[in-house]
Length: 318
Image (cartoon, rainbow, N blue to C red):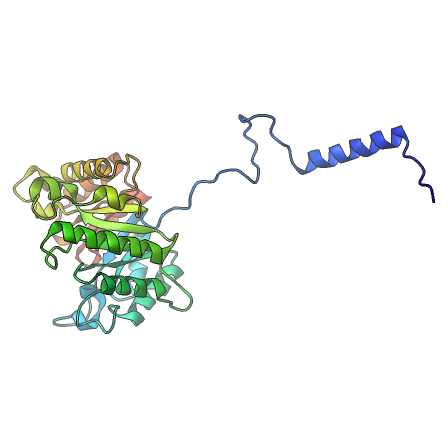
């Protein structure tokens, strides 16, 4: 059967209708300068769990097996106090190479309780671990145990390696090689999850005591980590200008960014120690953290930081 031809008027009407429908669905930008939002718009990355105010809890704070006398100073109930004080992220020591730990984790049940309670209060939890670099396979096994921990379907929001142990391997080149191998394994274990390096202050390594870890592999490590957390413990710098938190934090962050060749590197300085610091120390620490555009800030540790200091530390977050 022969189909009747479409008239020219009908064809024009059909094309016009299609054009109008297409225009209603999406306005296609005519040039690269257009600000129209489309499905290909580049969105900023989600915030790292290392941003904002943090609180530190180690094995000696919460694990019963690590108490020499009395009960742990920090329990999962303390999460509510942290949240009320404006803490955004809890940094919890989840794994530890120590005979007091049953297996690879400090205390799996308690770690899970901290995690669930923190998530209930809208806080992130970063699991951290201090490797000894003597047995890289064992260090990596413990790290993976943190990654695999599941508490009522909840998992950690980020992970961190506490890179400071030097007693296990005397030769610094060998130690650096072990660290690089472990770091590569840790990155593979977490995939795209956020990973941070808790490191010595560059001032401590380069000025105060260059013999601690000569040739620390900053550049080689840089590609693995999302953030750097230098231990800027000004209370360890008595008798020098570095006792001033503003001086110590500022120079440490500047040196670190130069070492990793990235002036935009995400840095979260850790101050301390809590009970050896003054109100002026905390004020100077906050000012310095802001001046270097630190993504976050915290003081080691929660148990030794006074109520007044906690309030001061949360002031920048408000």
